[in-house]
Image (cartoon, one colour):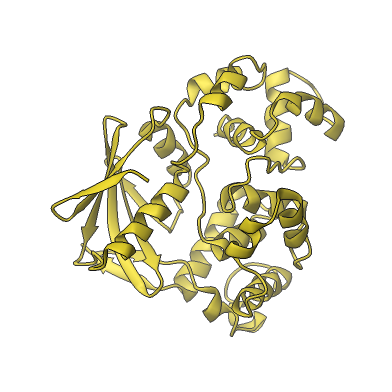
Length: 303
């Protein structure tokens, strides 16, 4: 992580294959997003490090430097805490990943060629917090994206913490410790199924007991981590691979059953029918260890 401080701001060096507009295009796709706000290409959000809540603004200069400014006197006094914020941002934008091999592979790939040209510099935008990633995976099951965002907003505003600044409220995702204490009845006002409420509370309890953690999963190999996630009630192969992709950063994560992926392959190949699993595996033959990036870029062509 290459970064330094000027006055009270943090400056993060960016890799050559990073384009802020490509990433903002992704981040702005849903107006109902409640975890950050984007105005004039500046992102405002809270990053929580333990009990410390820092309200920050992120802007980028010439795609070379990311400037992080602290608002509302929320700059942590300890350098290790500020370092953790830098680490969170690195994880959020996958800044430590060298995309050169991906672009080399994609240039010769019939499905990816046009997509990587159009969205060059886009990163797999992550969800660094495991509980948030799992909740988002569960909330998004078998419903459209707009409704999933509406559920997340209700959940966050019902059970998360917030900071008010400049007449606006900014939110922190509800901590698993708080959700582990609840029953499905407590979540009844949120328009999700009782089953989804049970799944989310169950995940929170596994995390509160220490049985489930990001640290444990990251130490496993891909197949073991996938198997561990699928054993959780409410987490199937799609949700597991979504979390492996966006939170745990396994490059081979591949939600092969994803409807959006099927639709985009159908669109790009001009086929009248959705691809079979066998056909998808054939298309993905050259994507080894870049399945997560290939999927993310293909998704991006849908909106």
